Amino acid sequence: MPEVFMPRLSDTMEEGELTTWRKKVGDQIHKGDVLAEIETDKATMDLEAFEEGTLEEILVEEGTLVPIGQAVAIIGDGSAPSEKSEPTEPAAEEAEPDTEEPAAETAQPAAEEEPAGEPQHTEAQRSEVQESDAARPRTSPLARKIARENNIELDTLTGTGPQGRIVRADVEEAIAAAKTKAPAQAEQAQGEQAPLAPVPATSTSTAEDTVIPLSRVRRITAKRLTESQAVPHFFLTSVVDVEKLVAFRADINAELASAGIKVSINDLIVRACAVTLRNHPAVNSSFQDDSLLHHQRINVGIAVALEDGLVVPVVADADQKTLSSIAAETVALAGRAREGKLSLSEMSGGTFTISNLGMFGIDQFTAVINPPEAAILAVGAATPEPVLRDGALVNVPKMKITLTADHRVLDGATAAAFLRDVTAILQEPLRIVL
Image (cartoon, rainbow, N blue to C red; front, side, top):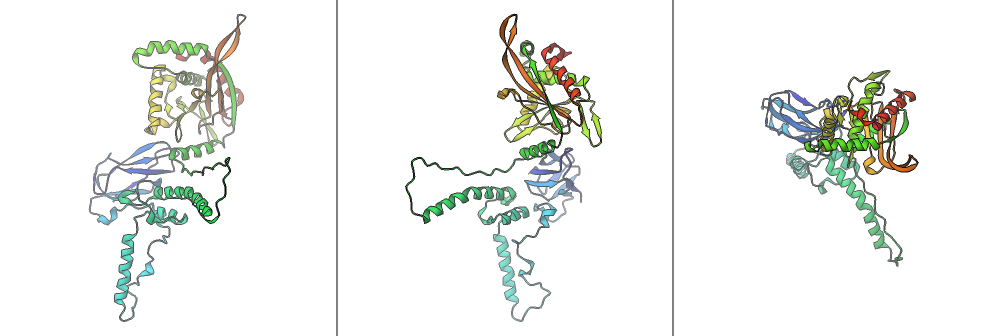
């Protein structure tokens, strides 16, 4: 019978979380049907069927992290017995000893001799074991393992998995609640044993720490940034006079108002970097083992902050797109990023990244490289600075941009030449559209 395996859905993917089954056991399956939703290190993806038949067995339950290549379901001709429909944990977890399950020795094997007059007693033991199993809450092996390690009573939990099954998330929630509750109980017990004493008017209570498990996005962000720290970074900063850029943006938006398109400063920076990368192919490169990979396409990533982490959607072929196209695409990408609906292709293939914190009033910062790219540009806020013109002080908006570069790929002079040309284009913005 054909097995459905966890596929590799991105170049950095090692495992995927099967978040939702879209089909159930017994459903007729056609090629291209969406069987389940999978959260990868980049996005939520659909698991599609490549075989025709009946979904005979679901091998992992919702919320399970599954390594690439492991079977998650079986599609057959519908002749499999129904008892195979019960979801199970990955094989590696099933192999773990389960001390909470009744031991095989509880009931004597039928082949062993039994003392005369004791068969009914042995039957009674078996019956008690079966009743105990029926009363035991439905629990995944991984959930039982975590519960044992943290002294969590499964009978006290309410399962949120299929058919009320207790899954890993239920146990982890109970662990977090227990950690919060324990100090309060200790204080209460201490108060019951000791006589009450006058409390000074200046006393204050201390809030307890809260344990918050990492979300998928935060977990992947932490992993990627840790990898990035192995890259030898160096930083270059330039101050840009953006007076003409601000005026240029106002003129463009006036022209595009009837089309409902609004160009941002960041859109102009995306286009300026893309145009400059044409003349600086070394910056549009990656370090790869013992070689350098010069990318033929210029794909600019835009860092988007989410509540639980950071994602980088990509504007592909940004050097070949108009400002209005870039503006419309970045708005759409940012919206899908916040809704968690970015596709894998929309977050893959980046060759250069821009991170803009100017909207938060940050004047200057350094950004961490997004591997395997060779550089990232950090953009600060445009703030007025006094400049002497014709003997008088006038306020001119200026913006600090900082290039972070991978020293394995770029030398200081190469990176400096790129940043110089980006600065020149931003200060003479008509060059952005050329």
